[in-house]
Structures are given as structure tokens and as C-alpha cells.
Length: 357
Ligand code: SAM
Image (cartoon, rainbow, N blue to C red; front, side, top):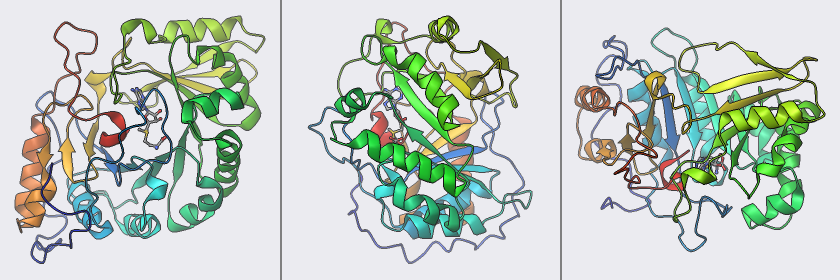
């Protein structure tokens, strides 16, 4: 655990732009030949839901949060190394005070190619109804909303929050109306738990004009729930939708090699679903991501066993060029792949809610 307080003031030293911003033209690459252009930043590990497959319900936030200005400093370092896409996450990022300020500042940044960042956010949607418009006005491009059921009772059993289904549905509609699109809905499937929602989600995608993405359950929960049998693999999802009373699925070609979802439309062109299969069809070879935790540690893989204390170095007053070098060096060591389901697999040191999904 980092030895700084939750409200640690910004360090006096470490001017952010002491090195001309575009003096480094080296892009972030790892030792496996992958270019890293996608940064996920957790801005809190607090969450207002206790989804049963993610959290035990007994553990609260575990890690400190940085000041908004500090996240900004850290993100700038990555952008100056070629990051083009930033996704804010948590915990629940909409709980975070200062979020709109952060988005406004991120909107002003330019990539190495002098373009605006692709700015996205992942949320449980609980606070989205009132925040959708301000988020869009601040400069956010789009949101992904997590929903694990379209049946209200099942949804509320999962989140453990009464009334949550209607609240999130309003949030989804508000986000779409505000133009936070393409609006994606992420659904984690667990066998015998919510796999009977697959056909309902396919209809939901068509009716609500959203992209529903099914995600295979990974061993990243706080408790000990994961087993290979609980994972609902891609093929089974496709087969089930194909048997439902809905127009047939048509696979869409990949837009870029690092795309994690297999995408499908329906034969009548209405609606889209995606399937993210990190377990049954791992896509590590095309991974373009790196993560920053709420306490400012770099994680080069969801399943990393070690973290790299970037914030500690910033706080200690390291100059910008040294911080950049540290990022370059750390990313070089990115893991080749995860080892889910293999003998000797070790769960990572943090669970999903504390890493930032
Ligand atoms: N609170 C936000 C939300 O609900 O989207 C962001 C954080 S949440 C941890 C990010 C995503 O991780 C959610 O879509 C959640 O369903 C997913 N997730 C959590 N545990 C997971 C697991 N073990 N395997 C796969 N996805 C998981």
C-alpha cells in the first residue's frame, strides 16, 4: 500500500512541461513488438454497486486516490509518448469529484499527431441520467455502460441495489440523447447465473440502438468464484442468438488488429452485438493497452503480478524526462499474455474493481 494520504497535495517539484512536449517522438512499444496507444485510468476504486460476481460486499475501497491535477500530469506523460485513447474507469468514475474538470483538461490535450484524444469512460450508469449532458459538454466522446441483465429483478440481484435497473436504463437513454455514442453496453456472462439473458440482450441492442458486448468472465473477482465451467464461450453465445427468433447474425470485419471484440450485426441491419472472449479466444497478441490505477501505479496487464509506482516518482520530484523514461522502460516489460486456465495460474494482486476495468 502506498504511504501517501488520500488527499495528498500535488508535489511542488516536477514541472509537467519542463521538457518540450513534442521532443520525444518515440512511441510506446513493448518487447513483443506491440505498440501501446490505449491508456485506461482508474480515478477511484470506490463503487456504488456491489455486483455479486465482482465484489464480496464486505470490502470497500482499498487504495488512495490522487488529485485530479495529478491524474492529468500522469496522463500527459503517456500522451507525449503516443497514447491516443484514454478511457476513464474505476471503481465507479462518476462518483469522482472533479471528473468534469479532468475531462475538460483532457479535451485540450493533443496527441503526437496533433489530434484530440479519443476520450471514453466506463460506468455502471447509475448517475448517468443527470451527468450525460455535462459529460458531453466537457468533451467526453462516448461511454460504455455495464449491464449484466435486461430483466429488472435479475439486474438488481446482481448489483444489490434496489431500483437500479430503471435508473441505469434512464442513464443509457440520457447518454444516447446527449450523443455519447456509439453507446456500448458491456455484459459479463456467467453460466447458470445470467446466461439466460443472451437473447434478451440481443433484442435490447436492436430496440435501444446500442452495441451490446458480451464479455467472458475472467478470474478477477474479489472472492473465489471463477472456474472454466462458469465461462460462457463465444461460440455458445453466437449459437444461442442464431437459434432465437431474431434475424441471423452477420459477422463484421475487424476495423483494426487491436480490436478486442468480434462484432456482429443482424441480417436486417438493425442493432449490433460484440463478443469479447479473453478466455476462450485470447487476444493478447494484439493488446495495445496499459493501465494506471487510482493510486498512480502502472499495470502492464490486467493479470500483472507487479505494479510500477509512477506516482511515487512524480511525488518524489522526478523530472518529466525521467518519468517518461520510466514509462518507456516499464512498458517494454509488458507481459506477453495472460495464463488464465493454465496450471500454476496466479490471480493478480488486485481484483477488477481495484484495478480499473
Ligand atoms: N464501475 C464501472 C462499471 O461498472 O462499468 C467501471 C468499473 S467495472 C470494474 C468495469 C467492468 O469490469 C464492468 O463492465 C464489469 O462488468 C467488468 N468486470 C468486473 N469483474 C469482471 C470479471 N471478473 N471478468 C470480466 N469482467 C469483469
